[in-house]
Image 1 (cartoon, rainbow, N blue to C red):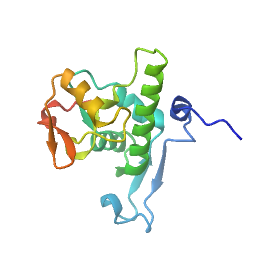
Image 2: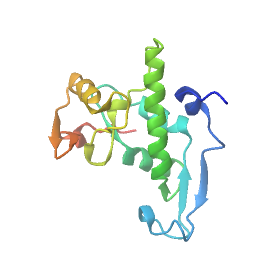
Image 3: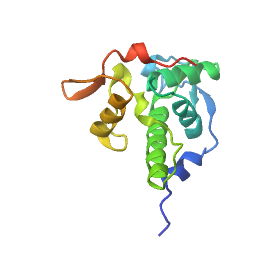
Image 4: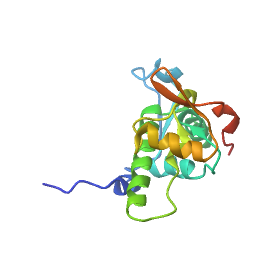
Amino acid sequence: MAKRKSWQEKLMDSKGLPKIVNVTSKMAGRWGAKEGDTVVIPSPLEVDEIMRKVPRGKLITINEIRSFLAKKYNATICCPITTGIFARISAEASAEAKAEGKKNVTPYWRTLKKGGVINEKYPGGVEYQKKLLEEEGHKVIKKGKKYVVSDFEKHLVEF
């Protein structure tokens, strides 16, 4: 049986990405795209690079990452599915590197979901990320079952 790839190996595996593809009729209607539009499928490292640049006290959302990448490639949109998957890979690779004693890791807890929601799938879960965000001066509140960074819009990073 083949050895499973580490998260850091997954992060380095670009699989021929990024690439820009035309929105097909099957894709049309999803994500606000129509046939003839273009979608960029980023590489895992590109998503990680953006997440890595978010300084202490600042935040970014997956949607901001997608907007940045769509503009970078002059595409109509950036694929939300792969961007989300690659953000998760970045987060897991960061936690893996930290567990190995590395210091300069990607601050994945600063990357939020739409609406400032903490991503429960990231390493350490919501409680760990909440602790790190509060240490950086953010106020985290519970909205229903989700944890949200209060006034997150005021802390969004601009590239």
